[in-house]
Length: 371
Image (cartoon, rainbow, N blue to C red):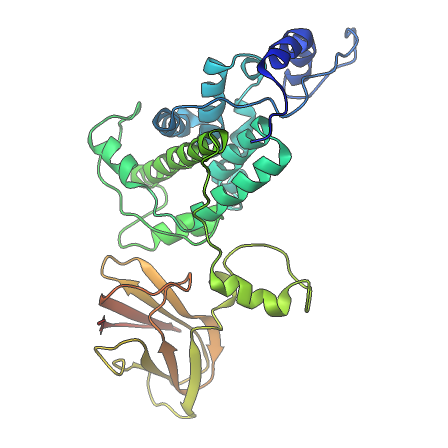
């Protein structure tokens, strides 16, 4: 990690600029010049970092969510509070409530997960730009491929070790494949009997908030101790899509997110049309079944319809979007699934379900992958 400022210099500067910071962060940056004393230069970023307690960050993030200020505040407050306690100024002069706006992906708009917003903001204050960028990319990528809530958070809840223990049941885990709040929450809500406006869903987001704060602290600790090793690997589909849409070709998109959730996976799914007539809606049994490594699913529709076909595991968790609300003409169609999930990873052996929705028609069937 870059040694931007020595501890001696840091303490000297914080004393020198304390008055300026107090004026500068009151209301976080809204300064009235009326009868104001001359402005003093604030402490420049980064403010520095010292090793923190990972599990305390997890518990504080969870508690912060339930404070009424939500996920973005929860993750931000967890990290900054620990730095306030360990480092002191200028962190003690920084209000954490201003990050409330990030809750629900930005006042409920479902964009970047608020827990990520809070943790990334804290990183940007603590760390030099290059380090914040490196660790921020790891944190965001890790989020897209991690099961939430974590086993640790579920166990804390069961053992009533959180600071707020209003909901102690184990919560089913999902991997969303995206940093977006909308997709993270909606993926979990796709499980049977899950609803948005419930204590269980809120607790799921509280545990997730703690998990994000904890991993942010973990990788900052690792970087400080020169032991950081990234675990996030971009899905192959991202590289595949960028061969056409990246800066070396069409140059018509930006981003690092998994492409297939919105645009479908063109690398692992092939769709063919068998004939142009079908008297009724029908979903056929896949063939072969059992299968390895791929299988074919055939469906028929009697009229043009938006089709959704997906694979789920035995817990009802989404594994693969095969056809994502695309319009298909009348007739029989075939889809080949190659046994990968939405991240291009091979799934394990076991029982899976595939479900077709077309118009008002819905049907599911079972299939078995063997290796």
